[in-house]
Length: 255
Image 1 (cartoon, rainbow, N blue to C red):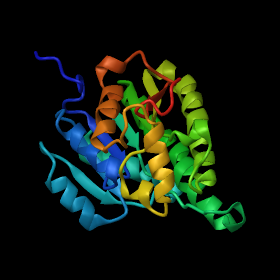
Image 2: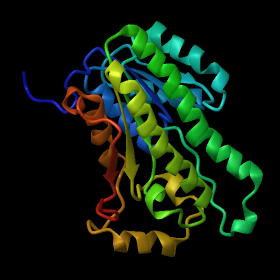
Image 3: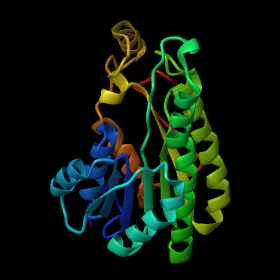
C-alpha cells in the first residue's frame, strides 16, 4: 500500500468546525481525499452545501450550527455519530477575530464573543467529542487551532483574540493529559499569517507587510499550507504526538 499522509483515516468519521472558512475549507477538502467521511459545521447552510458538493468521496454532510450554543454540543456529536457511524477526529477551526485599534475601544461584548467562540466553545465541544471517542473505544484525534499570537501577543488590534488563543494552548495540553489514557491525542496548530479574509479584515496594510518581511520564507501562507499538518496530526503517523503546539508560521516564530 502506498504511503499516505492520511494513513488510518479511510472510512473514519471526522468533524470539522469552521468548515467554510479559509483554512477550514482547505482542511475539509484535504480530509475528504483520505477517504474519511466528513461532518462539516459552520453557520451558513448554503455555503456548507456548496462545500460538501465539491468534496471527494461519499457520505459527507454539512450542518449549520452555532458552536456558541454549548448546550447543543452533545446533540451535534450525536448527529455526527448518526451520519458518520463513529467520531474519530474533531478538527476544531471555528474562530472569530474582532480587531480594535485601541484598547479603549475594546468592549465587554468583544471579549465575550471571541472567548465564547475561540475558547469556551472549543473546550465543551472537545469534551463532547472525546466522550463519543471513549465510548467507541478506538481512540481518537482532536486538533485545535491557536495562533502565533499565543506566543507573541496580539498585533494589529488583536489583543483579546490572542488572549483566547493562549487559552487554547493551555487547554490543549490539559486535554492531552486527561485523554491520553484513552488513546486520544490532542494537539494544536499555530499558524502565522495565513492569507484569509479573517486575517485581512481591518488589518493595517503596513502591519501585514511588516509581518511578511519578518517571515524568513517571505510570504503569508495560503490555507492549503495548513491542511497537510492537520491531516497528519489526525493520521496514524502522529499516534505518539500529543499535547504539542505545531508551529506553522514560515519561520516568523521559531521554537
